[in-house]
Length: 177
Image (tube, rainbow, N blue to C red; front, side):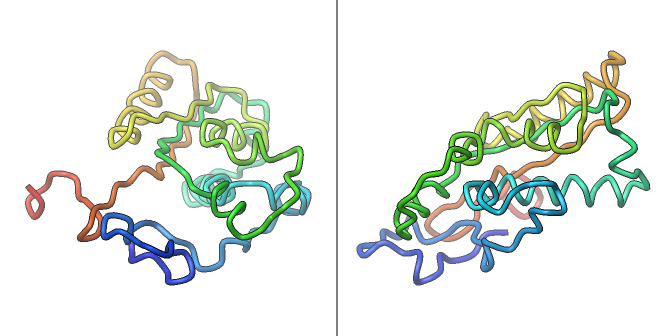
């Protein structure tokens, strides 16, 4: 769920349309060593990549699957992603040195690939950016990979959400038409 932009993240002349979003209070909290990632690489990683790794691991555990047991198996990773401002925030916060991991760490297009690589998965790995339909397209691709026998298991994650001047915008449902 979205919330109002924290005061320290507001531009000097904030417009009403920019007041809402998805914000993390402790953006630097990530157990990089658990995933075999160096502290420097973790600093260069967009929080979406860090969260996606944690969520993928947790989802597999919650499904009764030991993530390490999937190493080298045909497991697909499908991520719905829509936008990121971490690189802009890092620049504004004064991070002067851009590490060589910044290109891969700050690309939304590589979130699914980060999960596949870190967990040693060998199925298709896509980050879908089709705006508000990103999650739906990711689910469709994952279902196809199972139906066609390309994968035994799929991991699906979504970060795509949209906000407006009054707060989060909702999908069409009985309360939001």
